[in-house]
Length: 93
Image (cartoon, rainbow, N blue to C red; front, side, top):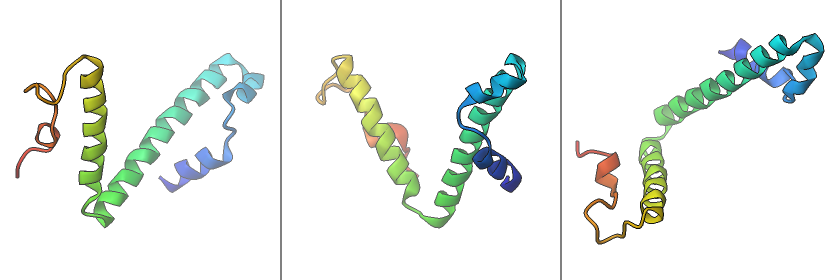
């Protein structure tokens, strides 16, 4: 993961610079950069979960806010049983 991170940090952010090597290389680099960005984010989330017990709760709260915004956009209010709450995201243990 360290080598992948270093290559990600040292490589150009602008994928258009890779067109000098051809469009196939630019597309492959863009795809690799996106997958690496997602893998690094997942790795950092795993590290945060290992260090902070409340990180999962914070992530669930952010997901709850997102789901409530979607529900409000669909016209679902807080009095409706379909309105999401924290137990829809985080089941009781």
